[in-house]
Length: 420
Image (cartoon, rainbow, N blue to C red; front, side, top):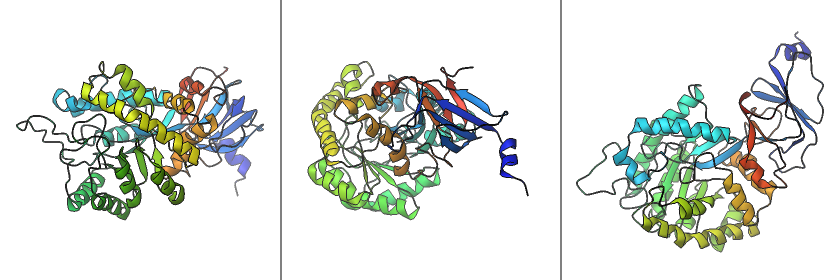
């Protein structure tokens, strides 16, 4: 029988030392901290670990070590400066894939080791991007992808917002009854999607129905959820308006994304069910108001943002007061890729405590996508996704905008602080 000590001696051991560890679960920081890795897996976490002579040491000094961050709402396959409604006439899938690779690297280096990708303008480019990252062709976050979001004729995300004589034949995302939605769900899963994104209401950055209007009926939303659940998968609902939010919650979607007009009734149901989660995207308001024109956003859609901004803020504050779990998403693509952690600063501005924000972006998000046994916290048996900042984010959440060390699956992608 081979002894455990011999197995460990033969393993690819690495120990990471840091001034403190925030483990992602909301517990008191570990000071000082050491994390022992065997290749891609965490095998011990303690203040002090006895290590063998052949163990590699990464000494981060007084830095704060954290689990890799998770963003539940990204659009990596977008080219900066081109509004999505123009992409279909001014770009192509190959260009989207190349920009996706670029944006994925920026996002990883910012400390986000996992992202839920909420739909590219060109269908299924995100599936190819996920595969390229998984196979090691390019660096990027671990991706959970939607493939091709599902919308309604004339609604948010209707890709045919041009002249009636102009068509984009490769884009097929419009559904107008439960049977069409079921077929769209099956088609997305056939082509490699991990989950389904539906647009339950109008949108800010789209023509068609106003953000507050419900665009899918309760029956149509239910059809998407029921079919996805038959596949053992979930639905994320883009939902701004109150009625659309309530319909999506009643149908059993996994997340309410944006949730701008989240009201007391929706909050009370979320507090009871605990199966559906609210995922606001607040920093987008700052970016749209400051840089919308420069980024090619039509003035009418900038005005839509002004319309929802106060409601969005109040909904978030009321959700905080109610104590419901709040997922972390950014809508990157609307905001610059790599600036994802600016969402944390906005949430802190509106009253959320730093520890709560960090739990949201780590262990809670892992639970929401069903990967809590693999990522989201620094624990024995979890994958070695670790990041570090030089300061203490519990004292200043803006430290998370200055990530200086990034490890994903035991591989270091960024290191500006270790002592050699």
